[in-house]
Image 1 (cartoon, rainbow, N blue to C red):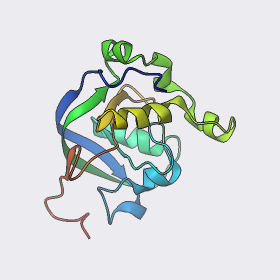
Image 2 (cartoon, one colour):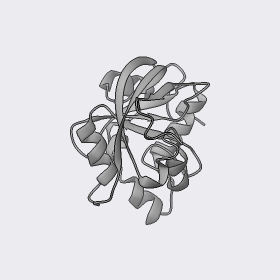
Image 3 (spheres, helix red, strand yellow):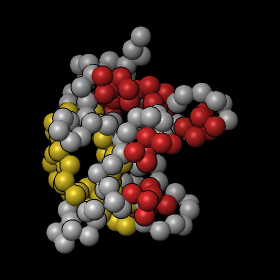
Image 4 (tube, rainbow, N blue to C red):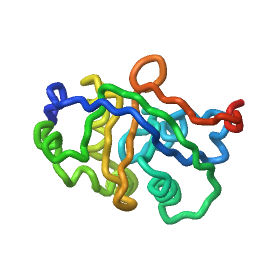
Length: 170
């Protein structure tokens, strides 16, 4: 049973540059969402692939580091998508029945300590089933904006790595 009114929520079209930090483990496959699928994230349950991108490079770095210092490569992407759920827009959240608190819920505590599924994972699955390629969300690491894609490639969002010298291609 749906808790949210996602089927009729407005779809935002986006086109432009987004940023992503790549761990050394994923340099060979910069369009993969397998790393996010392995452990899960705020907006994807384990087993659900996702690309986490940021509107600016500072937010991409802050999201990647999250209080840990570890190596990574900052990479720009061009993204074009027609069906994004814009959770940065209060009117869209209201229409979809999504509470502001979902944007900052302590998903790791819910997963690791409460041994439950965060509501954001349920919402992401329902949004994907409703035809959304991803969601635009405020960063919890600062004032930036993130784009989380669940569907990209041949169907869904068009994502192109901006790598004119081919350094990140196998």
